[in-house]
Amino acid sequence: MLSRAALVVGLCVAGLASAIFAGYKLGTRRPAAGKASASDGDLGLDEFRRELRELRESNVRLQEQIFRMAADLRAPSKSAAAEERRLADAANDRGPPQVSPKALETMRAGQEIIDRALVAGTWTEADRDKIHVIMATAPIEARKELVKSLIDVGNSGRLKFRLIGPPF
Image (cartoon, rainbow, N blue to C red; front, side, top):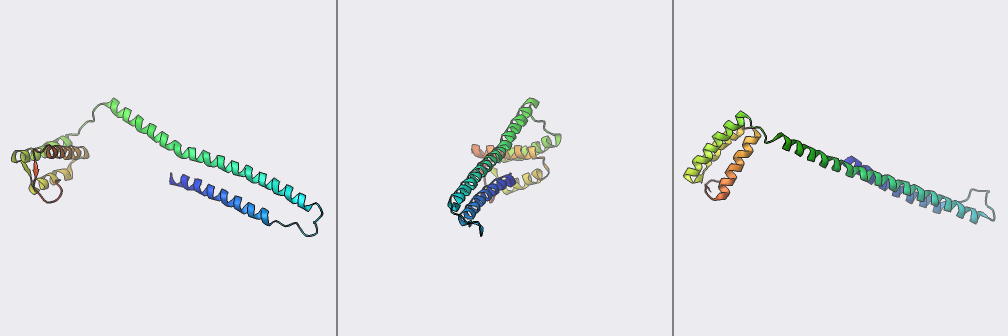
C-alpha cells in the first residue's frame, strides 16, 4: 500500500516539476542566431501557445493517471472488507468454534483456581502464580476464557485483588 501511495505522490511531484521546468524553458527561450525576422514576435507567441496547450494536455493526462491510481489504492480496502465479511459469514455457517480437549482441561484447572479464590474472597499473588503456570501451556482460546472469567469475577465485586502488580 505504501509503495502505491509513494508512487502517486512521486507522480504529482514529477508532474509539477515538469510543468515548472517547461514554463521556465518557455520563458527563457531565445530565437536561434541568424533566424531573426520582423515576424519573430508572432512566431514566438504561436510557439508559446502550442507548447502551453501541450503542457495543459499533459497535465490532464497526469491528473487522470493520478485519479486512476488513487482509485486503485481505495479498491483493495473494499476487497479486504468484502473478504472479512466472507470470512465472518463462513464462521457463522460453521457454528460455534470447537474447543480442543487440552483447552478444556486447562480451562477447568484455571477455573478451579478462580473458584477457590472466590470462596476465599481474595485474589492473591499465589493465585496469580498458579494461573501463570496453567496459562503458560494453555492454548490461546483457553487463555482468553480464563482471562475473561477472572475479569468478569473481579468486575462483579465478588473478588478482591490483594496483590502488587497485574492480576494475571
